[in-house]
Amino acid sequence: MRTAAVLPDGYTVRPAEPRDAESLFGLLSAYNTAVVGFADCTLEAVADSLVEPGIDHVTDSWLVLTGDGVLAGYASAFGKGDLQVIGIEVTSQDPSVAAWLFDRAMCRAREMGRDRGHPEITVDLWSYRADESLAALLADNDITACTTYHRMRLDHTGPVAAPNPPAGVVVRRGAHDDATRWAAHEVIIDSFRGQFGFVPRPHDEWVEALEASSMFAWSQLILLEIDGRAVAVRTCFDDFIESDNCGYVGMLGVVEEFRGRGLAKFLLQDSFAADAAAGRTGTILNVDTNNPTPALGLYTSVGMTPTLVLNGWRRVVPTEPAS
Image (cartoon, rainbow, N blue to C red; front, top):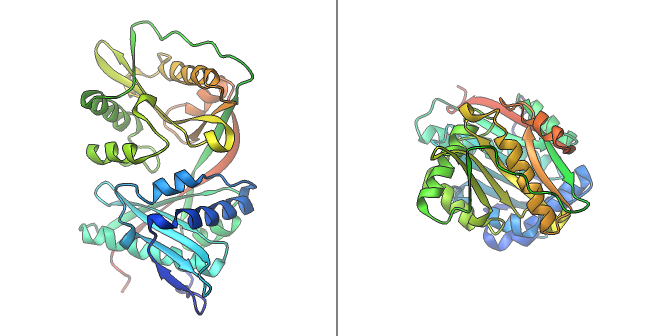
């Protein structure tokens, strides 16, 4: 383990606020461009992240500014569920700033778990595989890359035929009432349980987060039912419309006992048809290659190809400081 990091002289720190969206977007887009060659974020998405329910930016986010007031780094710690899993984010092109932000986020993660009475917590974060600087910082702190995400894409060059649902399947488009939202959320929890980084959110917080997002509308949720039971769900978002003119499948889940019936493939092909009809040039989604379901094989079988690779990192740490 390295010694504790120190900020350069004259640098200051304060929490992130909604008014910081534009400057934070500039920091993130410059960082991403340096690593992968493009911004990979939008101003709207950054603004959404600064008002997302479930994170208190006063205590759980940090902006580092130079003596001239230029934003040099950003980090956050996001407590999930009962705060036994904490997701952190660290961004800075200055290694000394990144190291300080990492230390601060880890310290806060331990505090959050300790305040909830946990003897240890799991810390998760992700990075671009090409980000050698962040990977070195994480490895130096005994954080392990334990899964890989592929960003998949299918291009649309013309109309795409809408698929027919599998026999016996009822398609519910939109979630404009409480009952449908409860059913959809329960399917998400059932189908994503055990996957890297997934911790169920309280239902009210899940609803609030979706409604706070400028990238989502309830009309973009589809629920599949069999014999009156909700068994599969798909949520789409507008994250990649501005940058790529592409639709984005944010979540696609099928309850375990109903897998292998073509439900996921139908939901995928249905999104392709909808995106093509809307004039989108493609459809994008992210997939965990260690997913307990054969999701990657499904996506490649329908013609999707990987365009970007990311790593998921994890470490279990005690909440009490070492004696």
